[in-house]
Length: 151
Image 1 (cartoon, rainbow, N blue to C red):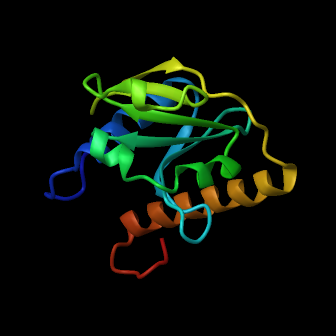
Image 2 (image 1 turned 135 degrees about the vertical axis):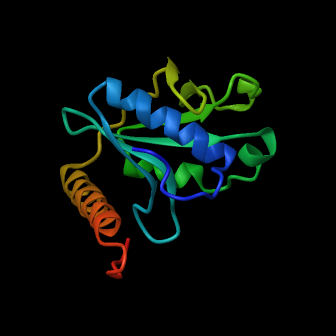
């Protein structure tokens, strides 16, 4: 799908696009800028073919990473956690016990798998339902942009 507005994409959004494209090659579907709970907004939430949920935070610069104080709060909302950065990012800043994805606007590559911490069944059900609802509302908003929907 082509970009829907004339507004240029920010660097983190370009990384997210490449990440989502790559995740699709592994059978995942993805939502950008997803809110799992009040006060948290993940850059990409990916739902895998076996129901696994991965959070991917896209960092476009050292300053962007250093200003992120909420990322550890995302861990309880996913089975695996990843950082997505471009090839110029100083990856030694990223915690070793998280996943690493190298990305650009067009594709990505998983360099280090994030450790698996399985979500509890009740939490998985809630987040999967929110994922489906959010995706359906976004699709409806694209098809009927004059209808106000909470997205």
